[in-house]
Length: 201
Image 1 (cartoon, rainbow, N blue to C red):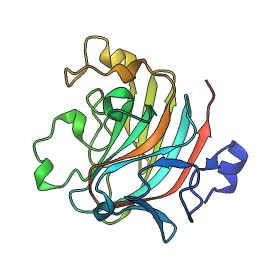
Image 2: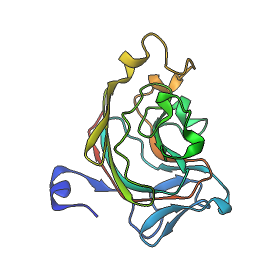
Image 3: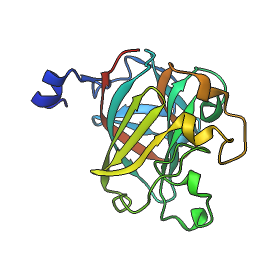
């Protein structure tokens, strides 16, 4: 639901709470359930769900609820094919507290721009509670705000000028426009209250 303030500020809702109209991709694993977008892995595992529209600069707000050990991602500036983490950019959505993730690299924890900019830790709510996140992209600058705490405030060009943190090729860093999407890894989690303010080219 959009607040009156968001409406007057130019935000639009991307999920109507009933079906996946306006979205493309894996609609077997991603389902509209009880007003949320739920990932149901037995319906085909991971897969991605993208906005039909492409965005360049934007303020994207959403809420998410993790299950223990859940791993997903938010793809931005992504094409509809290929690995969005490299062909676009991926912002991690992850249960940082899971034992299996105890030895991650700094750029793999929740909120990090995967392989490029590490996020501050400590702002995630306990697993099972709803988190609020905001991703603001303007040119090469990116800001990620989790539950009111800024966990990333960086510049993609600056962060990668001497090579990326993971040492891999990220052609998506050159992309300035693309789809926004949820990138599944076969784990159960839910999203709701998904809205965006398009900030233009």
